[in-house]
Image (cartoon, rainbow, N blue to C red):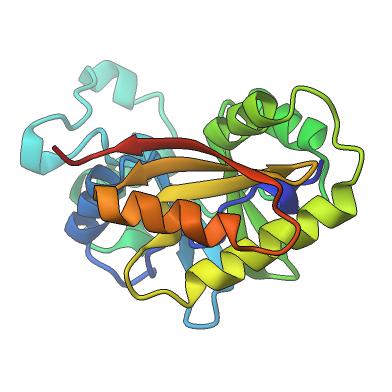
Length: 224
């Protein structure tokens, strides 16, 4: 399996000129650990993670170092700390050294990047343009959905793309919080769902997609 087989395409992003407060709300509202920073053409410019927001003046968590220690630190380190504590725009806090992968990267390569760099998600980039994200959770979903490598990867990939295309045309659902994994014609639907009606509709959409033999509902209700 490749990154394109499990990646989430509807990625929550921010722009470099967005307010830090807006980025923090997106992280909290969508329960994610990082936000790719993109320009108007979705070219990736950086990434803003939870770690970049830990030491903030507003909540009294700015770094407190002894004066003698600061004397030994490079000015660039102290300047970066100040930007992260006081910056108001995403560009002032984001990391510009982005660990990314191509849509054709294997899941083994993705897992290695996640482990080596101790990160939770990898932006998937085609050229310079962001096309998706693969997180640790997506790898676990792939493992749970397909304990063995699929025998018909090309067919499964086409089915998944068709399901996602159909979802993108629906006004009654937002696909950013869920994912689809297809293994040998079985569609596994993952993620949060907002209502019982939406859940039934998502299953119906997947069931009616050509090539789908059955649907496994892995969705988590966030309704009472």
